[in-house]
Amino acid sequence: MLVQPYLFFEGRCEEALEFYKKALGAQVTMLMRNKDNPEPEGNKMQMPPGTENKVMHCEFKIGETTLMCSDGFCRGASAFQGFSLAISVADAAQARKAFDALSEGGKVDMPLAKTFFSESFGMLTDKFGIGWMLQTTPK
Image (cartoon, rainbow, N blue to C red):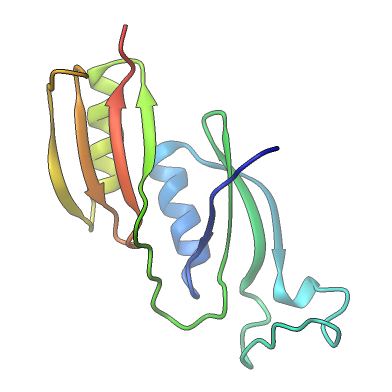
């Protein structure tokens, strides 16, 4: 069994992918657009007109983790609630770099700082509404 996050960016998927490439070195491993659907008539998901070039399905890697995403129904407003993506890095410098990059245009929920369980730990919500928790891996 494998559990993987699937993120729906409601029309902002490519913007999010570019942001995560810059912020975290994300690598897109597969991308399919709505126009690439081999069975558009048989698809139960009816897409709004003008969304042919939007992302139907994408897989990307951040470090060793594969995430999946799409533009969803292109409704314009994503609602990411009740979860955060957690990143563990080797040292405080890596944590700071990733934290600062992800928080650009977003909101810091808990500043990156030393805690009783980690040399560096912080929480933020990025500009797409994704919650992130960053920490150094305990040694």
